[in-house]
Image 1 (cartoon, one colour):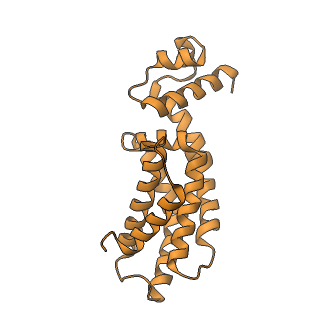
Image 2: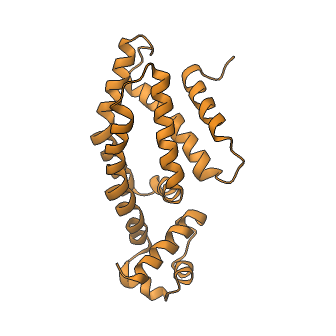
Image 3: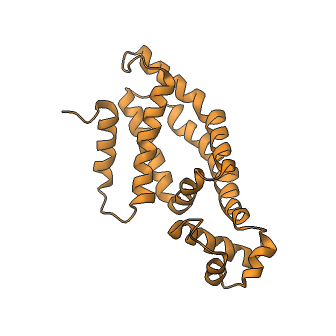
Length: 198
């Protein structure tokens, strides 16, 4: 990759994270990268191709499969004294990943709903690397009597929705708010396990 391409990708990443894909023009990207707008189109036919050049190699081809493998080894292939300990490890593991990759995750989640290619890749990675191991953990804690006999898909959906919702709020929607991260992690674990009623 040429220096100009690196500058274009860096500028596009920053602007897409700040303003969103739709609100960012290629002219703005060119100015921030210090290149002519035509230079962008010599490397990327469309702005969407530029978006895919940022998200696909970095997140889908590089980070997500590695993340999924690393994630399953770090979280799903360990033994825990109870389901709470599993949930805590799951949240802390994803929290650190989100902290280190905030800008890219912001772009990824902002654009996930608008681009079929991103959704398809996300689904493929989850189904290939995570789903079976997640079901195995849920079945184990059901047998131990710690989880209700809800369908595994319902339990997974509840966990993923709450954990991803926390991460998106923390690192995408309100990254500059005054967060007490440790307290918020504990609150998240508590309401996942016990709800919000007294």
